Image 1 (cartoon, rainbow, N blue to C red):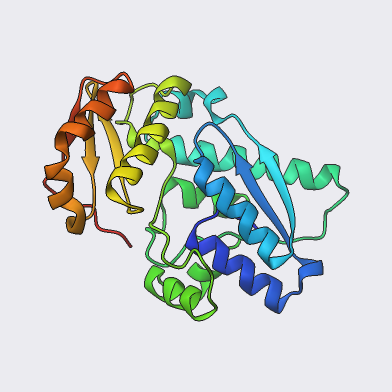
Image 2 (tube, one colour):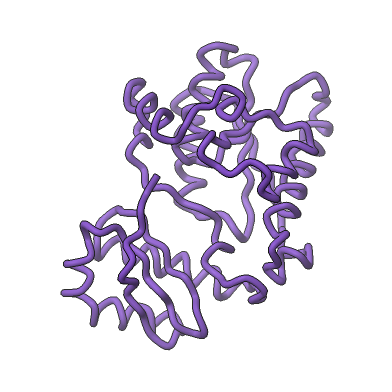
Length: 241
């Protein structure tokens, strides 16, 4: 099963370990320029807690020009590369009789490029099959006491860039570092540092907007220290799912 370290895949790992058995479940996590270290750390921890065999597959999606140029088909090609790398690793381990599952939930738009790629590759999404929403997943995660139950949602670093803006390692790393420093300043909340024309538009939940405004100078200085022109606080609050 594909374990990203988020709530959805962590609960799926728990369910797989519980119903299929640990001996019949392998957690696979992709490490790439687009993944966040905090998510990789959570994936490690969840796999260890559930006592699952845990494989790390390294993929450089930036080798694909659709991903590198951040085109509207980025997610399609990214998912294709990731699943292909996972299948290759499993083949090298001599595994062929398996089903690959992921944590795509019923709130995600069916037909999106990334989901289309998963379907083409034969990946099963149990939450989609049984129409299980994000809120239901989070509720179940609380019920089984997973420590990621309250974890803010996240997406890959490429989503912080505008479409057709070329992705590069230095900017992606700067975005990740900035978001971590903003969490130290504002708390462990859902933060999106989106790069727009050399500036960073900071999107945060409504309940921390007041403190963000009060510390706007610090936020601006942190942003400039990462090589950007400055920070723009979004007036539209980020709504977590």
